Length: 80
Image (cartoon, rainbow, N blue to C red; front, top):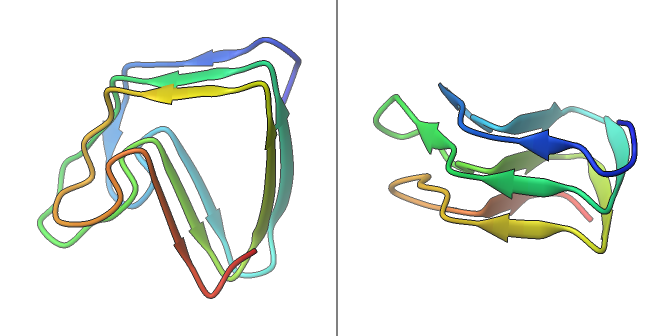
């Protein structure tokens, strides 16, 4: 992802803003992940969904995301 990118507003399933699944890797620098909403019942991680993957956030703003029932800003399961 290019430095300083803004991800907002998005609507979708797991990881409405960004979805990382099964051995994905990402490094996000100076980004904004804001105002993203999961659209399906049981979808997690409005801003960022990370399942069995690795993500590194540096200088990022993750705010005002909705990932009901779990992980409004970020959901990490089996991840680091």
